[in-house]
Length: 265
Image (cartoon, rainbow, N blue to C red):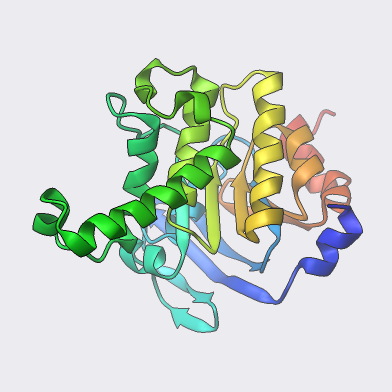
């Protein structure tokens, strides 16, 4: 999809973070941060280590509760989110540190992402009773489509622990997609990857955004990737917002240059 076509697709504001402040003891992780995320966009959050990026994702999906500020999602106001409510509203997340079930197959790992959508009780699932069996087949079809989409058909029955790191990250993305999220939070999806793996993951992120229509919030350290695939970028430094706008504008922001390169540069 061309950049112009992408811009035309971007809709109204889906998420607003309003004056968010978060502290742990006396340490301020986030200070009075506001920004919004529009429907169908790829919104990057960048900044040096310790800037508060992961803390912000944790506020968005309810892992942390801010001491100040409010969250507006789909027009509903919350002083804080909680992980279950976030999931039910269509927010899914991947993590820096993979939390996959290493002994389980690729298919079974991605199936765990369907749990929130399963209506059958545990007993019915265990004994594959009537409607539960039909439901599992329907969920399995969704998962098989995700496996095809992510081009990991050859590994569908392989235990995840045997896969190279780049493919494990792809399975993690697949598990998040299995929730059919409206908004996907990606916490450093390319950390530890080589150039080829990063190119693959960038393509899949763009495809998720284009083909599924999923809104994406992305934390990433590779500035080349951020500038290539993001629609807008918010920049944090020491828990404060120092930049916000399109990639080209952020790239030329003196405060951002100073944060990344040091005043001497």
